[in-house]
Amino acid sequence: MALVKPEEMVLQSRGFQNLSWLRQIGLMVGLAASVAIGIGIAMWSQTPDYRLLYSNLNEQDANAVVQALQQAGIKYQLSSDASTVMVPGNQVHNARLKLAGQGLPKGVGAGFELLDENQGFGVSQFMEKARYQRALEGELARTIASINSVRSARVHLAIPKRSAFVRARKKPTASVTVDLYAGRSLNEEQVAAIGHMVAASVPDMEVEQVSIIDQKGRLLTTPDAAGGLRITATQFAHRKQVEDYYISRIEDILTPIMGVGAVRAQVNADIDFTMTETTRESYDPDLAAVRSEQTSEEKTMTPVKGLGVPGSLANQPQADNAQPVEGEGAARDGASPESSSKQVTRNYELDRTISHIRAGGAAIQRLSVAVVVDNKVTLNEDGEPVSTPLSEEEIGRLTTLVKDAIGFDGERGDTVSVINTPFSVPEPVEELPEPSFLEREGIWNIARQALVIGLVAFLIFGVLRPVMRELAAKGKAVPQAALPAGSAAAAGAELGEDQLTLSGPQQGAPQLPNAGDAYESNLNTARTLASQDPKRVAQVVNNWVVNE
Image (tube, rainbow, N blue to C red; front, top):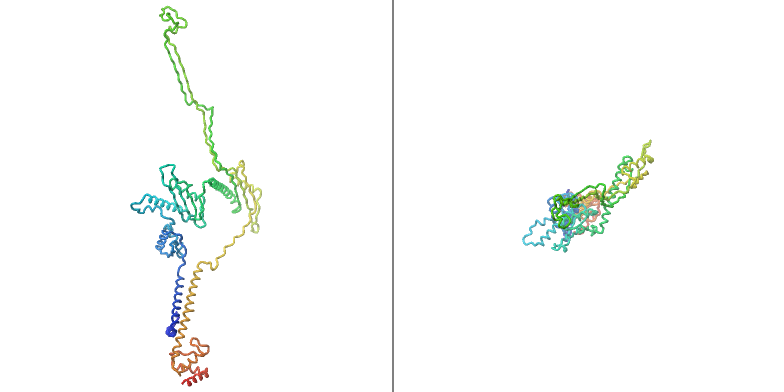
């Protein structure tokens, strides 16, 4: 739609030429500023709403992220320090998914890829060790950052120089700093896992030599003096696990009978975590067996010469008819004396029993069970729910079921208590209020577009158009002043100076003709003015006569 007609352009140019040079410059500056403001507002309305994609990026990650966004055709904005990347709000999630598929951002320094770089000739052994230690720190940081709650991590290793003296050797130590996501934390198991992982990655490093802190400077590793406290925490977790197990068994067996939400159970388990180890050695004397037997027997025969009474007769041969002397028959018969000995050694093995008895911890010493059941709900004749208390017989049956479910043992002091009481009905949860009109999605974009349209319309219809009309009105005044003196049109123009306006005539007053109208039209206009205001016309004619 054209705002200015072609015939009005000529008038506007004539009106612009009638202005002083200072007003012409001001008008040109105002028009240029209005156009620039309108173009700027239109461009601002088309500019997307950028939102944060990643922050606190190092130079390597920022470069990799920007290249990935350029390849994906996603617009981005990079901060002056190259640590923050912003993308249009409607593409934040899409950009993060694409970057995550490429493993970006890494968030930590380089790892073992440092060893792939060409080190050149003349690199000292110290530099090689330093590069290897840096690569190891980067790999450990990457592994720690893979935990869900950890945003990034840094690892510092202090590996002492090896010494030839055993007493002078020192153990390596490590310090780990973790940057956690907002609202997240590491439990004791995760902290212990990080410590064991770092200690297992460095030779001769112990878990006690690893210190872990978070971004707030809090020490997450537990000192050695609190080793007993860690054991206590483990025992407490085991006790809670046992209690939850018995609670689930009780509720699973009573819920089908009483209904969902009509059973509440609590179990207190008294667990003995004492560990006892006994070694016993016993003998049974009735079960003896010969393990080994050794027999030794010795027999000796010695010849006898010159037996008898010492003297000459003993050495002389006896006659054939001589009778043997008493006590000398063996010697005289030529027989030798004989001696023998026998020794027997037997080793008996008794029945021996050696037994090692180790009583493991976590032995349940006592169970205390408390169960609360709701009243039985039935429908009356009108179909309305009615709450009815349980009878003693029903409570007794429920108690029996609970005892069987937990493995009740009266000898160890187990107790079971089942109580029937009506449950209080919770108040209905209020529905979440609907978002207000200003909180609806996309309303601010619509408001911004409407504001832009309103500002542009104001510049066009409130600034540019009035200026153009004023220039056109001044352009109309030029041909009226050029009419010949004494003509009817000139009279009409002079009359208009007092009671008519060129831009907008009053109601009932005639409008002056344009410069290009015919003579007949001017004559009719003069007649009409003379008939409407004869006194004014007479005064004009009188002025002509006086001037001439």
